[in-house]
Figure 1: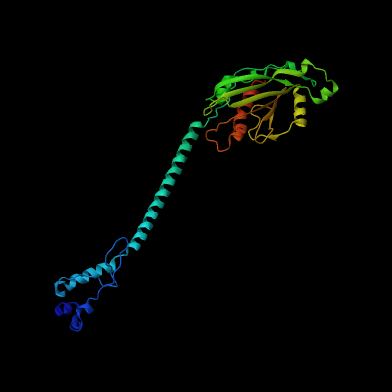
Figure 2: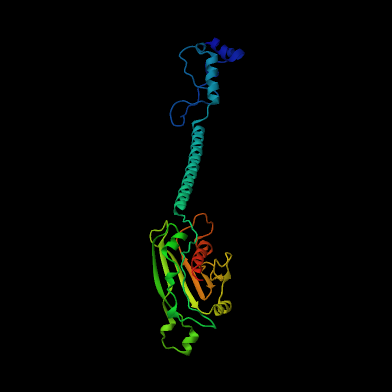
Length: 307
């Protein structure tokens, strides 16, 4: 037995220990994921071909210290999985953020391209002639002016500069009230106007077909004083915030649909319509913009022709 080597390793106790006592046979087992001897406690199995003194004490202690600092393969595997999960989570968050940002940018660009600018009324220098109506006189419906003569395509383009495919269609109006019908149900030509209403269709920027429509309808033509008293008594609606826009008086007949009913001189009329577009710089939805910003321009266009 080489006691010198034992003395170098264990100090004063080397003389009392045998080789087997100083270096007991290690317990054997398999490392995770491999084979071979494994460490029991702080003792590392070392096969010596000669005397113990052939292994420097410092070298032996260095191996032991390195083993103490290492984590087991299972701990390393758990840490790697945790790190991988963290990285994947961060990558997922970054990817989702980029997708959301891209969606917002695309939506903003599409909205900007599809927004429609609203122009200003530019009534042409024209006048719609009415006969002198006094003493409660009422103009028969078959003598009403053509509703389509109140607004032309150039006036529409002044309000909607980007309008295309503008078309107009005259529609008949039956002016017979149920009271008059009860008194006399026979047909009379005077009760019907063949062009008492005009429907305009157009394609605005962003529309694939002429989805925007504006309509103008004559409600009555009579003595201006009779029109005032009739409208005050029978007319219903809410006063507009925009005023009468050149008419004598206007009310909004509905909240969403928002048609306007107005009077000027001998004419009682209504305007309305709809669109599928959004309007530039408007925070409100299209029906409200149509009611509050578009229809007033058409009212001004019509009222300018009634002197």
